[in-house]
Length: 339
Image (cartoon, rainbow, N blue to C red; front, side, top):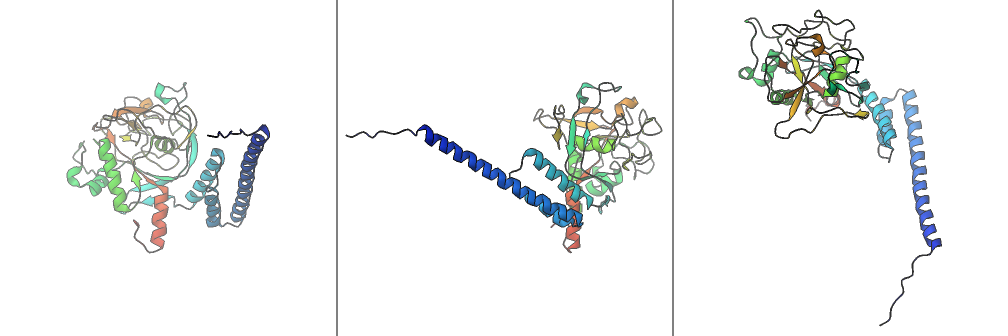
């Protein structure tokens, strides 16, 4: 039996292999940089020409490249900006007449500074980027709108008086009921309707402010709190983005499972985790039962079991911006909105 000697590669062969590998990486990086430069040039020309479609197409092409996380984030931000610029400022539900306000992508700091009166430790925040446009309800969902979607027999609300309830906010809403309402409304209108995330809610509530409330001199003249009953939606002044009753009236469910905010800057954060059998949700905005103004601050959070049903708990919903854009495009093509 003859034995074959296995010859190990020498140092020169190893060095050549390493060099070839490095050359491969370098060549790929050079090709990627050149391709990105061509795309940027094409996008720039389209922008100068006012050709939004071509600019969007160029940036979407760049996403096929192996971009760094930073470059990818910049491209996605530009795409979101371009697409949201083409969206209408408002949307009205054909099923309920609910009005929605466009909220464009942006970056803000969620939570509150340690010096803010009435704050809690779970308000330690961070910088959050919202990368996609969305439409948020101009008002809290009213009882008449709830009934239009869920049926008259399924109105959970406590009636505070014997007067008309058309513009009274729906109340005693459990988390699952709020999710069901959003899903049904979305199907009826042919759009993607859901609860807002906690970051979306606070971003819309703040409306570019950094103060405890969306108003510099907050008082009971600006919101319903420390009261015996909610008021009709829209009874008070809206914030600068045209959104009503984000402070007080009824507390509003958000989509998140209650959790601490991330420690580092994050894009499109959504609270997850918790007990899978009995997760805690989050209520935002305070309510008419809030004893103090501090409980209605933009950053105030209330941890609550999702099964909870109280006369001070209501809901506000959002619609994904891209689903509105898709509805508009399909309508222009003469197709039903859900196709």
